[in-house]
Amino acid sequence: MQVVVRGASIRFGSRSVFEGLSATFPSNQVTALVGPSGSGKSTLLAAIAGFRKLEMGSIELGPQESWVRPSSALVNWIAQDSNILGGRSALDNVMLGPLSEGATLREASQRAARALGRVGLGATKHAPARHLSGGERQRVAVARALSSTRPLILADEPSAALDEVNTVGLADLFAQASGRATIIVATHDPVMIAAASSIVTIRRSPL
Ligand SMILES: Nc1ncnc2c1ncn2[C@@H]1O[C@H](COP(=O)(O)OP(=O)(O)OP(=O)(O)O)[C@@H](O)[C@H]1O
Ligand SMILES: [Mg+2]
Image (cartoon, rainbow, N blue to C red; front, side, top):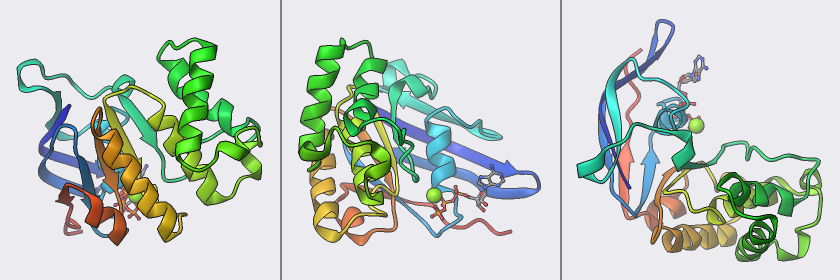
């Protein structure tokens, strides 16, 4: 699924975050979304996910012959703060991905256990998520995205709490997952940027 942003503008009150932003995120590739802190990377991801409306411009998703508007139903979101439920196990948190797509409990549990194994958390899948470190919680969020079949993965600084070995592992997992999903990674991390197939840069708009 290709993502095409045309002339997009977003403002909060009198402050413009970006204006007239155009960018293409190619289908089934990992694209790094880069730019200074505050330039609007998280805001653009939220717009692509359909969580935030544009003031001007458009975002279209799809193959060209059947464009659709942004919709959260198409998206796996890996949030900057890992949006996971602290009181539930890592496995339960990951199962939410496949369950939200209609998988049976058994299927969801198998897919979740496999994905947790791939991010190196196979041994801690029953631990309550609040007992996991920041980097481990981030990997739970990644496992949830990997265990789902939605066509877009939007990851907001997914390596912020990871060491270099885990970051390289995450870049590999994204590269593998790009066989079935389009992946956009907002990041400042040189390892993630070097591993991406393409790069989109947002420049800070004049205040
Ligand atoms: N709900 C909001 N209300 C008002 N201003 C907001 C809101 N959300 C974001 N902003 C502002 O919009 C700008 C862009 O924020 P955003 O979080 O998209 O930046 P970013 O590029 O993701 O930065 P970082 O690299 O630090 O994560 C910032 O100046 C921020 O303060
Ligand atoms: Mg951000």
